[in-house]
Image (cartoon, rainbow, N blue to C red):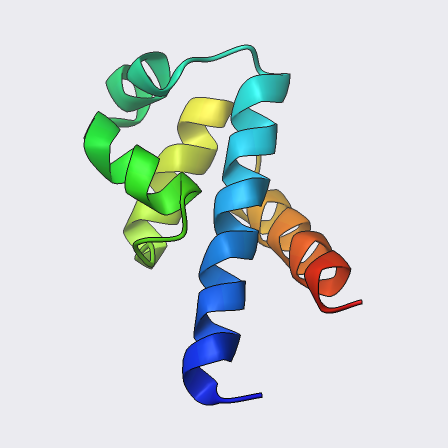
Length: 85
């Protein structure tokens, strides 16, 4: 697999993990944006695999979702593993 394809799979896996946790918390993108102070359009891009989050963004999103940043990364790893199988 090329580096470009691998990176795309990673971005998509992070987006799926973020979306699932957001929906489990019954939050809209607008609400998550308000609580995390991350622009809603950026959240949309993250969830659709269009952007890679910085560590500070992951921390802000995790706080707003009331989870540890490590849980967000763990869920990303699960999504990534599922996408490769």
